[in-house]
Length: 284
Ligand SMILES: C[S@@+](CC[C@H](N)C(=O)[O-])C[C@H]1O[C@@H](n2cnc3c(N)ncnc32)[C@H](O)[C@@H]1O
Image 1 (cartoon, rainbow, N blue to C red):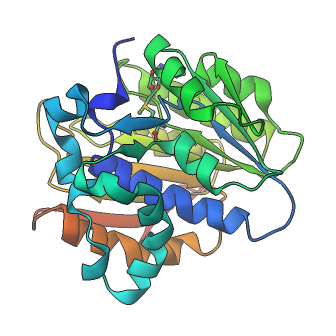
Image 2: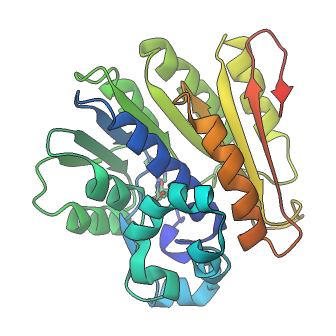
């Protein structure tokens, strides 16, 4: 297990994933009942963009470094504002970029709960420092897929599960698909968000097929800053959302064109669509 998110924090994929994450958390907080956020592959929590790792790749410069709220249309600006407020000076490469745990820690209410899993010692060290004495959150050194199976359904019976694996392993798409299907079978009302890279292979199609075959309906959001390239450089990625908030598709339709316009320098694209259990995929 070599992957460290410190090299990639604040890149285009983080901006996309974390903007959507804030939108779902805001939706969940509209109701007074408590909920739980489970982050199966949580990472270090927050990342120093002036640190050696972030500097080495400079990926944040093509992500959060390009986001300009003032240049967005008013609706997209309004939808992005909660995320931008959390990012603060990280947009200029100063201070810490908030990973998914820091986003949740900043947004959730005193009575909501969080569970963060990771396995990498450095990530766990950062994660524990990020959580500090916050009693709402637990950090567990555990395989994320094992955690998913063990902690569902949560006692609150409301919540969001983020599955954001590093895709180092050849069979990560298969593992993710199997984990999502069995998690959904344990808890059909949960909001599940899974991140995936879009590269040369057929991983995203395989994931969609597994969900369709299991009878799961899901919203698919794809976002690219350039067409997928052979080799290592990530230029395209996607999110699968099972049980998305009713407003998410409309919000994504407003946000994604702006993100493409700001982050892609003319070569990007986005697509939203539904994975339908009947084998019928509708693209919008
Ligand atoms: C993409 S990063 C997570 C980023 C984070 N979710 C965010 O948005 O800020 C993936 C993380 O998964 C962790 N990881 C790798 N294998 C894992 C496993 N089997 N179970 C849990 N975490 C794992 C890595 O250490 C890394 O911190």
